[in-house]
Image 1 (tube, rainbow, N blue to C red):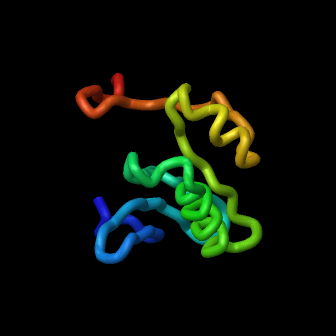
Image 2 (image 1 turned 45 degrees about the vertical axis):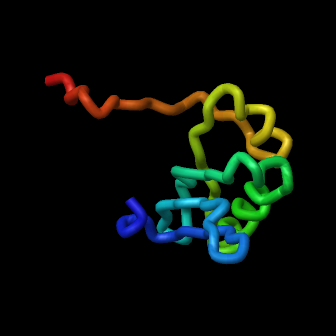
Amino acid sequence: MLANSNLCISAWHKHRLIGIARSLTDFHYACYLSDLAVGLEYQAQGIGKKLQALTQKQLGPECKLILIAAPTAHSYYQHLGFTHNSRCWVLERDAAIAT
């Protein structure tokens, strides 16, 4: 999972990993932020926001940041300035392309 990502930003407390933002990007047009995670005891301290800001800083000025969020996180991302887009399709792991 990590080896095939081309942009990973992490947060550490001493020698402990406390947060990560894992992305796939071309650094020009689009960046898919596939995972954003912060340890429970470190949440609500701005760490996730900082991970996203550092991710965006690594991208070119024309590169858009795209992510898929659980419905419970919609207000969080809206608060950060993301706009909701309902144009997403998912093919589950155990499904095959219909022929």
